[in-house]
Length: 100
Image (cartoon, rainbow, N blue to C red; front, side, top):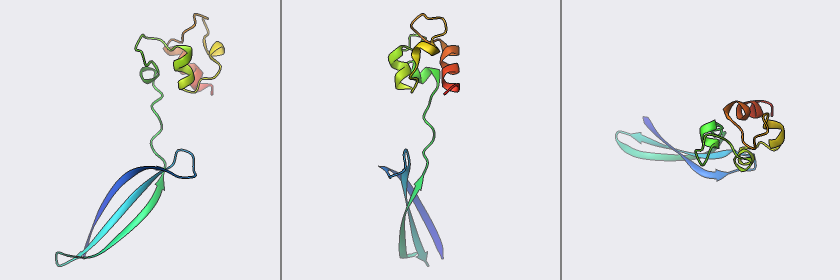
């Protein structure tokens, strides 16, 4: 007997924050004939979001604006903006992320 496992992720979310659901279908074959199928739903944690400077810099101007910072979860922009120029450079951005 041999089994073929087909897995694909569904974009469904469950009661757990950021959890996703995966559907696993196992087909059983005997002498080349399909004799059964089992369908299971499993929860899994998706990969962490991309928090890189390049992803945060949505307009690709080389710095992070207050709006871009907020979108990445940096809520205290004024504290993160160490040189008070109204933008975050890479170092300021990475320091702000690591201090959260």
